[in-house]
Amino acid sequence: MAAAFARRRQRAGSSHCSRIEIDTAALSVLEGLHSVAPGLCDNHRLVPCRVAMSQRPVLIAEPRWIDLERVRPGSLPGAVAPWLRDPGSLTQAVVRACAADFRVAVQHQGWGRALPSERHLLGQPLARRCLLREVKLLCGDRPWVFARTLIPATSLSGAARRLARLRNRPLGALLFADRRTRRLATQVARLDSRHALYHAACSHLRAAARPPVIWGRRTLFRYAGKPLLVNEIFLPEIPARGA
Image (cartoon, rainbow, N blue to C red; front, side, top):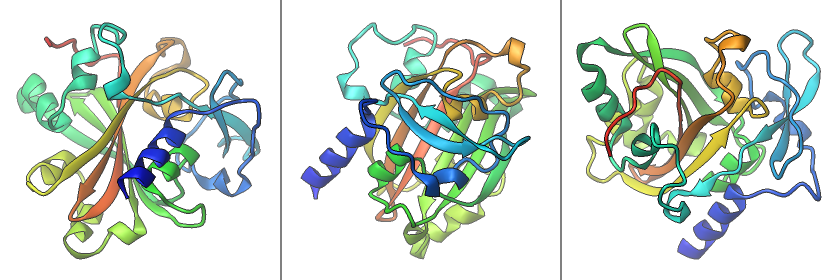
């Protein structure tokens, strides 16, 4: 089992442009994402999505995800490196930095399909749907983090059924309250305007105000014995923190 997971993680964290396979069934993956732009091929996996205005399929790239344990010291930008490397609950870290003004704003929750690299990490077949939950963690009215959680339908049983009823409560508070929760893998990536997650994370910003690059991480957890994947994208207004 461990060897199979390692192979899935390696496939999910790298992609090549010598052979591009268009996954037409993934056209519905990015429901709820708006104003995405066509991606370019630069060692990124290309997946189709829909543009809200035209509803015509375009190609959008996934970033190159790298296992955090393989990232060289000093290669991450200093302002976000401590956030990316934090081994604990991001929710708790944001609450400590923000104090009383912290809140969760739910952007979207519903059934959908994972992106190709997400499917590989979760070990999910194409036809199987996940519960998608997208939120922003805010300090006052300033979004600090965009989070996208994928919970396979097969994971929503037993104690894990409460994951579907979070509403505006933070997921991290539930995950880290259970000592049986396990962090199986963490990957980091640099995102730009070629990437679907970049546009979802920056949806509150005017095009001219969007930074050229943002950073994110994703973590595969096992909760109540079932897998789920959490993407956490750090937005421009999140403050730098000490290592």
